[in-house]
Figure (cartoon, helix red, strand yellow):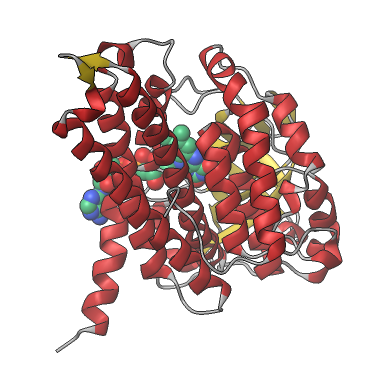
Length: 397
Ligand SMILES: Cc1cc2nc3c(=O)[nH]c(=O)nc-3n(C[C@H](O)[C@H](O)[C@H](O)COP(=O)(O)OP(=O)(O)OC[C@H]3O[C@@H](n4cnc5c(N)ncnc54)[C@H](O)[C@@H]3O)c2cc1C
């Protein structure tokens, strides 16, 4: 083994695109990330370059103008992007989930309408489940779409925590439609909401109030979304299937969890790279700190965690690509990779001594970015719920 997180069995194209993304990250992302992050500036030039590289259409089928690549290719590109700056991978994450949901659940007309524009990055996706009162408990959604006598819908309610809420132009929003089903999650419907990018009342009845000020994950916009008498048509329902929203979103979140694992691997790899370099430069008691066994063992511990997380992420992606159910594998990969990422960034921070606390050093940003991965696409507790439920079903006595 020469470097961490190598993946066996990649095709020539996969190797080529991942190498291209890595070179782009080294040249364009790492040198600018710290400054853009500290000023909370949207990385427009980086996003434009990602469009040029076709990254917005990576998993969109070729017939719609995308590259038709696998979840594995996507995840490995995300790992590289997050190694440079987690926010950059966040720009394509919600887009990729919405494109995936359209591909899997959209009608032909919806696919024709949105996917070609999504492949070029002209249309940019965000997804919205969370509300001020709920995140984990998705079935408790309160935002309501009332069906009118003419078959149209009127939506009212408040959504929370939309990644790319301001910069996106297509939001997949999960709302309550009261299909009269006995179980709450059968009353949820996904609406495809088109809007211009920006803030304020962007279309009648739909307001994006502004950016939420966050601990980390800066540069990228995270917003609320307020529906106030927003008019939607029945054609705006994903797959024209009212009451199927919960299942559609869970399908999207499942691939999203592989993506979060990949981001955790990327952030962890960068934290390791910084630590292994610093440990050889910094001297105490007459030798590089890397020669103190306590520090060398930390490096060994970090590298082992990164390898384990990477292998689980690759396994979960390959399982999904093979058409197998991967909820447990994705949940395990997300849980392990995000927890390990939080630990590895903390270890790297400690190796940096006092300098780790300085804003001049990259590790302070990674320390602020990593905790989001413990929360986004379902907290560790929710992953453990998913994993344990399946285990108890599969190992029932
Ligand atoms: C920066 C950022 C970006 C985000 N982007 C998006 C987005 O694009 N779209 C979107 O829809 N959402 C988004 N979210 C929301 C995110 O998905 C939720 O924050 C997350 O699911 C947790 O929900 P919550 O914050 O309401 O916490 P809660 O659900 O209130 O949970 C609070 C605590 O209780 C624990 N808990 C809850 N239920 C259980 C249980 N049954 N058993 C054990 N423990 C439990 C949780 O693990 C957590 O520790 C984003 C969040 C952040 C911070």
